Image 1 (cartoon, rainbow, N blue to C red):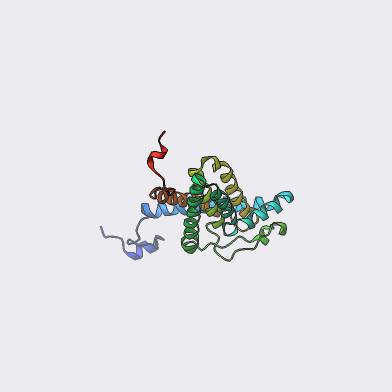
Image 2 (image 1 turned 90 degrees about the vertical axis):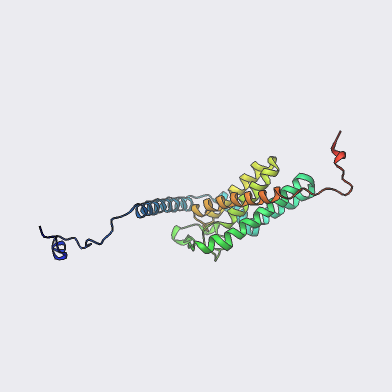
Length: 226
């Protein structure tokens, strides 16, 4: 029996020819990942639109001010300064927290935003009320640097100073939400910033664990024994 020719294949409507490879497991996984990412983007877009459409005049001013206060981690620096005055464990927590902020800021601006060139949300199209407006940053949207720094500080300080974990965690969450509320970030950007913040805190804590605590002049180990 004669083998089918290219002409026979074309006549049957098979334009792929015998050399067309069948979809492999890699391409199937890639399609699945793309589908999941597309659906997540749709969810985040719907959440952004829902926040924009919800009237919250009482919260607008407070969240706008909080978002401003978190610029350049001013809130974290202020809290760290207060902790540093306490000496001992609070001071160490402040130093570790600021180290985590440094790692988060570098990771966000030097890596994240340069690798993922995601456009900022269109506040006008989403009809975000102007009462919420803060200046729209010129940098990429993904990930949220404000959130990464706030979460990094809260996580690192909370490990060293557990009594501060809950209030600082709540503050970091509020900072992250304020970036969505003011229309400058999608929820996905904030979620990614939070993950990056936790990772940055882990780096800072690991580095701090390798550095022995400073001892006061005249300190003797026997002083700690009863």
